[in-house]
Amino acid sequence: MSRLNMGMQLAVLVPMGTLLIVFDSRSWWEAGVLVVGVAAAVVAVVRWAKDDVLAHAVPLLATCAAVWLFGVLVSGSTTAFYSITVVGPLIVPELPRRRVAAAVALVAFVAAGGAARLLVTSENRGGTAFEYVLVPTVVVIVVLGFMFANRAFYRVLAELDEAREHEAELAVARERIRFASELHDIQGHTLHVVKLKTALAEKLVRRDAGRAEEELREIHDLVGDTIRQTKELAYAQRRLNLVGELENAKNLFEAAGIRVRIIREAPVHGRAGELLGQVLRETTTNILRHAQAGQVRITLAENGITIVNDGARGDGPPELRGLSTLRERLAGEGGELTVSQTGGEFVTAAVFPAGEAR
Image (cartoon, rainbow, N blue to C red; front, side, top):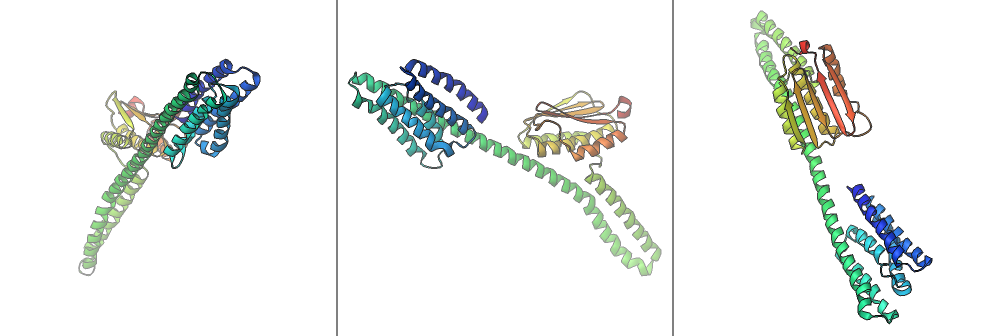
């Protein structure tokens, strides 16, 4: 937005300043002074867009003030106020405090500088006051009002961007809570059963060694099965419900302020649904953590899924470890996982041959 604003301002500022110099200058040296003022205005716009205009505020304001006083007291230029009505309103709203007082001081300086023209000329005093006092004062007030409104607009944008980041962090936190919940579901029940069976085996070890041995064997099998399920969960290999994952992804994206569009071209068949659910879950996490997406499009076909988001950053697709692992798993099942980046869009696509999907 800053770059766009800078481009729009320069597209108006430079041609307008050039026209004013051409029509208002009566000699080359007068034109040279006015060019200095326009150059100061251009520098102020560029530094403002880079958010460091305050670091150059004093020399910029001093230059523009000198050009204005030169136009009033020496050359009689009616447009010498142009540069200060650009630079002043860019700097005043960015001050850390006393912005209103600074705005009043700027308006007073422009008006007082224009009024000084009445001391050095005997021309029509009404016309002089109109050209050197009223017009510059009104212009600087209008531009100041616009820049204060512009600053408020940028503040709202910054707050919205911060809120979106917080929503994305909250969505990731919810995903972690979901993962922790699944881990608890796997291990909580197992540990409780192991505790009971261990206590039972302890009581049976002297009375019924065979029964105690059977209990210990069941504990061993139960722990082995829990280890397997935990590994499947950790490496995204646990069986997932694609419909449930679609709903989960939709809720997470909407919570993060990302628009979601789901296109169902055909029902997904067989084993493919479980693997595509894993692809969708991993891609959802990657988008929330690594992208700055505003919109996500999920397309389901009979034998594949495509997830497109518009938050790609950099010149090429990043290396994502989770998707690399899933690519190997899909290849082992006869499928293919591809990632690509075109412009600002990042595309994750997983597909199975029609026979393999069934």
